[in-house]
Image (cartoon, rainbow, N blue to C red; front, side):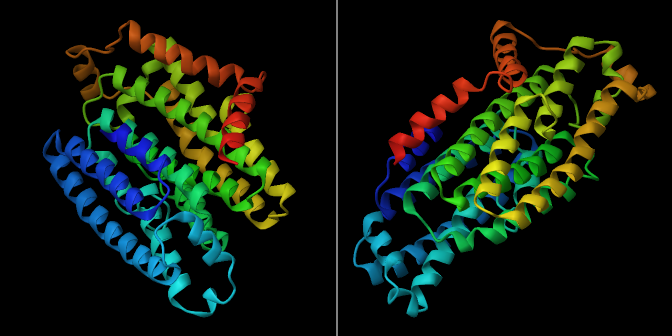
Length: 363
């Protein structure tokens, strides 16, 4: 049902179908989030309440735009946006602003990200994987289709890069760390949309493709390892017992940090290159600065894996628990993702060809 809602969202041509598709996915996510421990109920309640708030803002913004434009279809919104007389009225930019705020809530863009760490922490890991990937795909194509004013995106880009870089520096739980990491990735993803050219949109789609691969891989590895409290310290000294697992997880985190020659560096490089071509020099240097800061907590995970000793409690816990839960499907999925992470930088033809065809269909 979540995937069906995203497919309906991508194929929507008017505001009513967009609202119904978003709510279908949101309600399904709420059911998936609450199916867990006691923390899941709290996380599901936060997701539901804030989702209802963002839905109300979305409907209010749609009402303003539809009342001024006289139609619920996106084509009329483009005419409304291109008309200079419409922006002389305060209701048109207010309607656009409310819609963007609502979509930023769904997309976990800062400063509307307050629900993300708590929901990631309380939800089951399998639900977190869906929550980290599926909404981003749908909202990305929606933002491209409706053509909202790019000036509203700049504050979301800057705040997302900053919060993603600083928010995870003091985190001790793996899911909260990945939540802030996802917020930082959203900043890069939105930057490609803001530039607006064919090359920047393709760069943004390449980044989304690589982000999906890295997210699937890192959460598959975490699911395979039997974590108890989702603490980073549970991975301490793991290289002495599971060296191949530790090396694989390190490669994935190096890729997420954007360290060459892994696929994550390719994604950030093409987005930064498109930013230079569009002469967005301030965001270019700011994105590099935030990426360097974010690399600290990714490397800290690698340091925990290889250079931190186990405590007595962890040794006893691991002695009576199962270390890995691997089967053929998980091994195949992790191996396929690691293959793309390792070799996509050296042979990026597949990624660029795939994204080129997608962008051509959108245009």
